[in-house]
Amino acid sequence: MGMKHYPAEFKADAVALYRSRPGATVKSVAADLGVNTETLRNWIRAADGRRPGAHSAPLSAAKAGGDDVQAELAATRKRIRELEEERDILRKAARYFANGDALVNRCQFVDDHHRRHGVKRLCDILGVSRSSFYYWRRTVAARTARQTVEARLAARIRRDPPGVRRHLRSPRITAELRGERGLVVNHKRVARIMRSIGLEGVRLRRRHRTTVAEPTAAKAPDLIGRDFTVAAVNTKYVGDIAYLPVSGSKPLHLAAVIELASRRLAGWAIADHMRTELVIDALAAAERTRGSLAGAVMHTDHGSRYTSRAFAEICRSAGVRQSVGAVGSSADNAAEESFNAAFRRETLKGRKGWSSECEARLDAFRRLTRYNTRRRHSRLGQRSPIAYENTFRPATTTLAQAV
Image 1: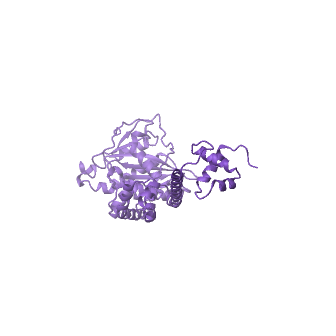
Image 2: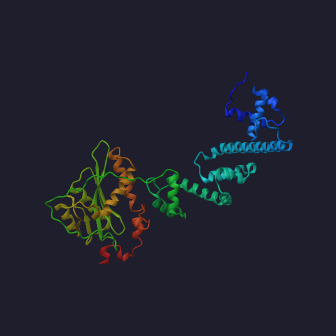
Image 3: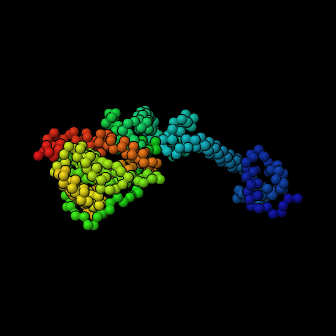
């Protein structure tokens, strides 16, 4: 026996079932649902806005209602087909977005499937404007050519040829590519290619104290005054000591003498101590390189090695005038500090130290010997110190010649 009280949802579904079967009768539908025929008829009348028990609508009105139902069903089926097609398209497109949902991936998918689904349909689903797609399509040839050129540049950089080292940054690598290979390339392009292949310059942040002032030492004047611009070579020099860490052993120390006009490494010395002999050896090496340092200025920090009597005597015998910056101010000797930082960055390449003293000495010797002839400086227009000095007239290459 059927229920006496039917929920509203059941009634609505029963009426919708009857209307979805145009060839069925009220009696057959009522039998399928297990309800009374007249009960189903009353539900249909109530849905049509007629009183229960009222006479049936004219045949033309019933036919019109059936046509509306058919049209609604057809629209629903069409919408379902569209949704199913959209689902299939998105499933296929997911493979194109494995490396990121970039615009180029969307355009590529539209180009590959537009013959089946149409450009407009695909662009609407993927959220791409048709103008963007057609522009992307027009520039395929130019883009392919550009990608080919950049792939070749990446291969040249990755091969790590002489002069192009992995620790260098994009401006110097750009200068190497221009100078040694004669390529026309922008440094921004090189930087972008380096990022794409995972190359990045190394930054060192840890600092070690190598300057210990001598309170009783006589103080020399500051003849530089943070003015590191020089018109002629062999007139102004700066000196400092760099800390070279060695794993499981005493650290080494590098004393360097840098000429300010060309940033040339005029002299250097390495030892496992920080006694005055270290800086004396570096100054002596600079004197041998230049032939004479008479009249030149030697600017250093307040370290006890540089303010010692022995170093002052060597400077007087070489005709060098001593200059000392302020206590505790690295900016007063910024040129030498920059050299020390770059040297450690380009030799250690992110490591904490060398594995042995022998490795540290050989690595330092290798870097220092090529510093003047190969390393390019941004301040020198991406030229090496020797190449920069060659631009000076012979009359201004040394102070002695100028006098």
